[in-house]
Image (cartoon, rainbow, N blue to C red; front, side):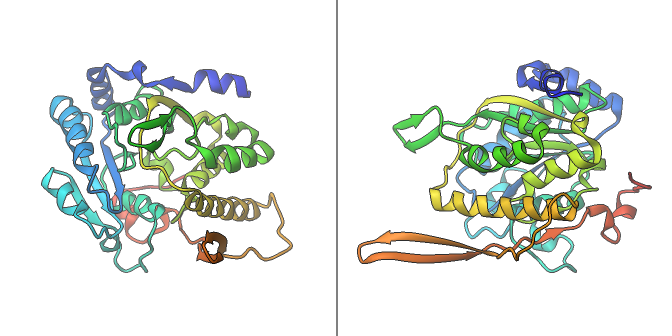
Length: 328
């Protein structure tokens, strides 16, 4: 499959799947269960609305979702209490697989969701979306139910950059994608550069795929997923869906720099592990940044360790819990 063919055949718009009754019928015909996971850390301002919309539209009105769950990193606000009050199943990440050393990070939550949730399809949606709509779920589920060959779906959208409550720019989001990830993909994995937003926080996949790949615990998890799925199964099993607009909390340049650092860590270590790149020097685990203050510059170093969890299928007890046979 060449690049033009994939972009044409495996790129969708959410409106193609707006007949949710048809999706429910396909779900029942395939005999699959679908779980929605919100990975959270201090999201009390947005989590209630996200749960209410998904529950009312995709459980009560249309029975597309079998469970809605929050996997929380240890919020210090009332995220977990609100989520529970509004009907989500709530898990504290460190309580899942408690025999393992707990880590902090979005990737940790996503990985542990595989063990905690029951679905054959797992939908991941960030918990900070201000314009949440149930299309963020059914748009991702649509290709997985309508095409037998598609096993993993990424979202893309226009990401308006909120400068303040009264000023919104229609472009400017996705800065790390255009400055870091797309150049790396273009250099080493040109086919993956076709993903409009490889770092989008919304994606869905079949358990049979997700359980077979490792999960970095930090910023590199989205990049790692694409690399590992591509290397093992190719572009043919992946797709992307246009969800139109997404409003969320924007990060400052220093935060984006740390994100870029973690992504590059993951990328180069994955390249080295696959034998595609040889590093002849040590990669350090500290991001050095400099902040301008009245008295001059202040240095700041942030330790960003590139830990990752192994494929869930290798975790003792998981295969038995989910009656998993031999995987490919």
